[in-house]
Length: 134
View 1 (cartoon, one colour):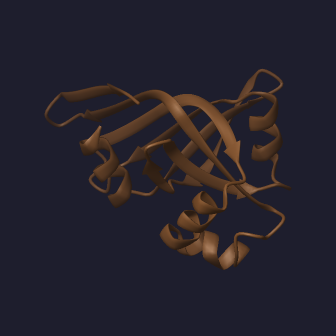
View 2: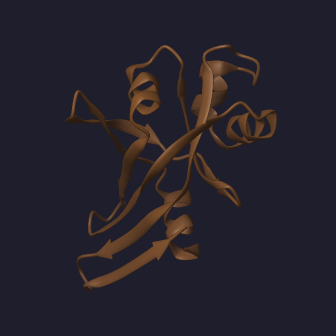
């Protein structure tokens, strides 16, 4: 899992997949950080992704490396948290979150995480595959 987290730290932007009326929906998204509680992301309360994840917490996040031959996929169930610790960590880790929300008490600022799920890394040039549970 350490290898996957390092990859995510170096390639923070990917695609988050949710569902709307049993249809897949994908949008660009930013990885936040990993802690002992899970893998963290953020969004606005007024975005569609917020209501989608509230109604169906199953999600997948995929990031492709800069060389286009390696990618990481995370799949799991989402939980939302209002814990100030995690909101402040997100603001520290993400310039975008800091620009958009400014502080942890912004009423639209929502932090969510995958507490457990599957994480896999695929390297097409070598055929390497790593599959982990978190």
